Amino acid sequence: MNEPGQIASRRIHTGRIINLDADDVRFPDGSTGTMDIIRHPGASAIVPLLSDVTGDDPQLLLIRQYRYAAEGFVYEIPAGRLDAGEAPETCARRELTEETGCTAAKITFLTSMWTTPGFTDERIHLFLAEGLTSGETKREADEFIEIVPTAMSTALDMIERGEIQDAKTALGILFVAGFKLGR
Amino acid sequence: MNEPGQIASRRIHTGRIINLDADDVRFPDGSTGTMDIIRHPGASAIVPLLSDVTGDDPQLLLIRQYRYAAEGFVYEIPAGRLDAGEAPETCARRELTEETGCTAAKITFLTSMWTTPGFTDERIHLFLAEGLTSGETKREADEFIEIVPTAMSTALDMIERGEIQDAKTALGILFVAGFKLGR
Image (tube, rainbow over all chains, first blue to last red; front, side, top):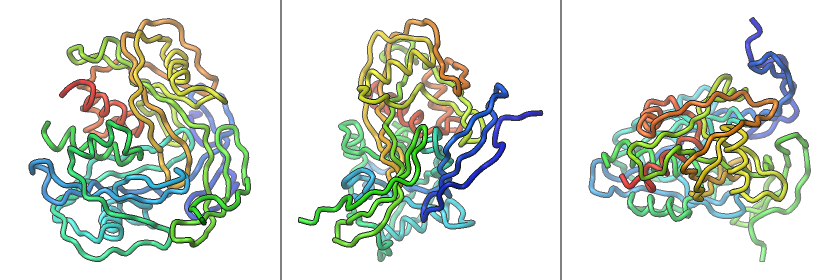
């Protein structure tokens, strides 16, 4: 009857992207403690392939983006936060268009992951986009993005060599390579 | 001469695991803004194989751990925060022993990743452990962990089916499957 979970929650900081709560928590053994937790609305990310996934070494649109937290530019796949009430697939399509200018003939859900569940409730929903048609980008003011078309085989080399260092990006590419390319 | 990066930093919250700063930032186009950033000491995680990686469908030690942020139990690989001044490999060995009781004949560095660079400087360093010898676990008070030996092929199925939902865990397993198992 005393299930593990929240006993009480106190908002410490309300930010533009994240909020910080200090929560009183009951653990599975019945003990209690206080934990800091970053509340995040969740996000979608999308592995964008120019052709379809069955093609011979399909081209992927990586983006190279300035990330203050990483003190530099990071290779990523298009991604962004869910708007209030927004479905993950709608968010994935929106971010694909905003960041690359492209729309996709086909979108497939891959998986949802906790980004770092030790301290945040952020979940990221991963999608595959196939058959891109280009259009116009619509970036947010604080996004500094360059589009880098990259063969899947090269992207895998970049993960292995440590040149792709963003977790959702490596995960999305390895997921597609492992389960969709039929290797 | 005005490189992108930090102009000023103000500590908003000092926690047991994370700190929250509000930083004034210069972006690549010279514009400035304020960003919330979660400061984290970094972490190591380790893919623990009972045998060596070249074996036929090697057994992996997954752990099933209570995560308040995920509102339940999550399948993970052993992982934890770097102690002050601790080398990532030392941390990986320590967490492996604390959480599974095992020591490894061989440890190999895989890659380092930003867990979610939109709002935290947390980096996770991924390792592969081969040839485990069991011993005693030494868990921290707030860790509620069950060890779940799992064939690599089953772990890959669990990722594809969405039963493994922790990003570092899926990433570590897919990295090993993609680059170390020679598939």
